[in-house]
Length: 236
Ligand code: UDP
Image (cartoon, rainbow, N blue to C red; front, side, top):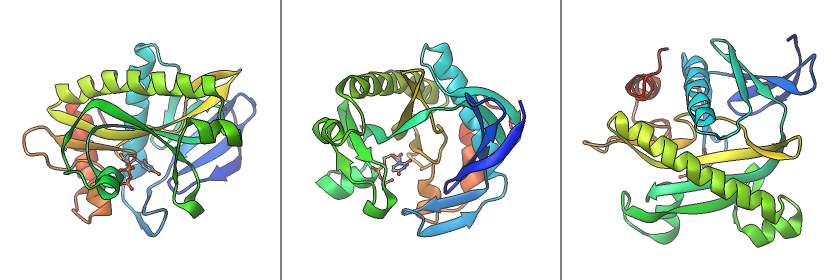
């Protein structure tokens, strides 16, 4: 597979065309952003760590029967992925209250959420990713009712698989965000799963082991990502 022109550069990843229109190269850069790009830094080894983290998790999800866009690791910073037609909607599941849920509803950080919640957000930096619902998605054509039902079902299967995986490493999967796209008409998991897009706490100390370390200036960001990875069996 031959890597070709840059197609799109996001805040932390770049996407390149290949000579096969069905596949793309996803490059994980060291760039780290928070607050819709207001806080930006380069963190040494971050691209490599997130690339390998994502590859490992996507393979676990694939083994559990979830179709993902991940094909193979190409090198430290790049993976080969399927070319999905992405839907502009983010799916968020929460097992504990944190982040925007705490800010929005005034509940205590860490409160257990039973059953876990499922939320939809529109991908739109200028509008700060507003919360939406099924009705708005269908009316504005961001996704169909059936696609949204598939996304919700798959997002909750991911919760079962990954909550267990992180638990085995002495950690709590607090919340996470997933993005889906269409491949040959099917809903397929895209984007990435890494400590950039989820919250993970140590089960004993409740220490934050995810991008909140960067957002809140807690330090040791990438060292902690690697610690999370090692605990679930990733070799960097
Ligand atoms: N998240 C993300 N990208 C976004 C928004 C949220 O990866 O654009 C992740 C975030 O890291 C967390 C979960 O989705 O794991 C829920 O985020 P929340 O709604 O609490 O918003 P935040 O506090 O991150 O602003």
